[in-house]
Image (cartoon, rainbow, N blue to C red):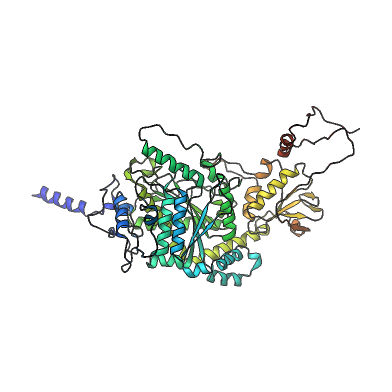
Length: 614
């Protein structure tokens, strides 16, 4: 009797444990029979998802539930889709719901959906980025918010511009602008072409933000202007969809790999924030400088199940510490809220470091906004696959709720997790929009004060540099980053030396001084720190063999100078009056090679020794 009683008690205890804490593998694939919307997991927050008065699209909702491999990969935010009599769901335009197995969407069809969404909803506007891709394709930008906010979009852009340049306003005016303004949250999808889920998710999220009438979504629409770049690497996305469809149609046959995504670029296209060589990078920068969003959020795929970025450190030493704190604030809020909802494997800290400023989200981090990213679990397509999780299934201090060691994973799971988490982040920013806007103003103000509070006062590129074309190119890159560059109108002497008129001056009392400082300063990496995620050198002056002088003497700030407008240009000149030929000084500039190719039929010789004047 005692043994039977003990066994009965043990059995009762086991079945009373919430299923969400099990870490030994996936549970049943199908949701409960006949369910339209999943109930709360034990101990999870009260439902704030589907409205009790708003109908749901039952067929689309059934697809969500069917293609989610386990209820633990659902939240109340995404376990349904609201219905609308006038606004089309992605299924109505594409022919399939988002997250359908074996379905990936070309960029032209994504754009077709967003344009139909704009036609049907006054809460959606579409725009086209300034440059086409190297493959000649458009890159689209979508804006979603309340009708009243979209009607005043120009005003809200004016507010963020003023908050971003504290030289033009007082603290009292800034306070009024913060109260009036709206936070801008920018979600950017699929810079990495084999990471396939974010363009799908963003279509559904745009619809949900436009249509759903829950207080949770209404708060986002009221206080946040959501910007969406559905696919950043447009050329690579379409090639990836081609390859995926080919593989599905020719299973067992050898298929080509995705060698290049864009023009001679692949995975490192998100390391172009310093060089600005790609159209997608220049589009991101141009869009940032136009809107000055509060948050720029890149959507990636790699580690299970959802990593929200903070990084292990060391963090970039030139960043304002406030932005590092904001990384932590947002990430831990998402981890906590997703964990409350019974979702396993949402974590932060143990991936990436935050050191090198070469990443795309430094478009935000280097300009007083918040740059961040997700890594979700992806299958490199739209298949449902049994996966074995490696080291990330271990429980660590930063990952107390680790992923399962084995899991059946679908693209719908991926969509559910990334959409739930980013909506949680948007709602958090909406509920704290004054704090985030004030931080943006404060970081901008601290950047202007940097010349005197932290130093240096400026960087000077002397006008007598023997490589003037390379100096001008470097100046233009700095200007492309949104930084101001002046030129001395008269010779100036500081403790660091004498600088002739015409020298370029990058002042540190400007809003984007931190970006200029981190690009021009000599980076120092402590040998006692762990190996960096990217082992990257980026001091641009020495890399281009252009002299850059770090000037601590604040006297430089009072020197006569004028702000440069437009690209820096160098005009060549010819000295002497002889007719025997021309001597071109060898400085190693790239323009010398261009000269040789442009005058390919002209005889040229290279001197083997120095030429002396007689």
